[in-house]
Length: 85
Image (tube, rainbow, N blue to C red; front, side, top):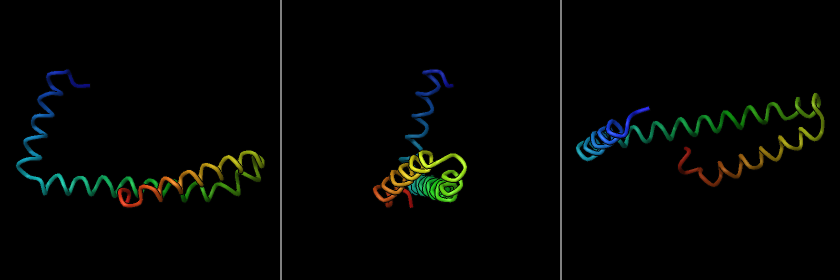
């Protein structure tokens, strides 16, 4: 953790860099968004792949819970599709 003073200095440096080179920060933002989208897609694939096994091994209740999580995941991905991809 940074001290309050170091955090303030870091924010000043970041703000100055953002003002002086906005293209650099735009590239960083797009990379971060791409990673988030890939992680969400990977999570979705893992959950869909584990759904049948979870249902067979653990039971119908666990499968139903996993299915609800998948529906929520799909809703989040649909809602934020422009930001994630």
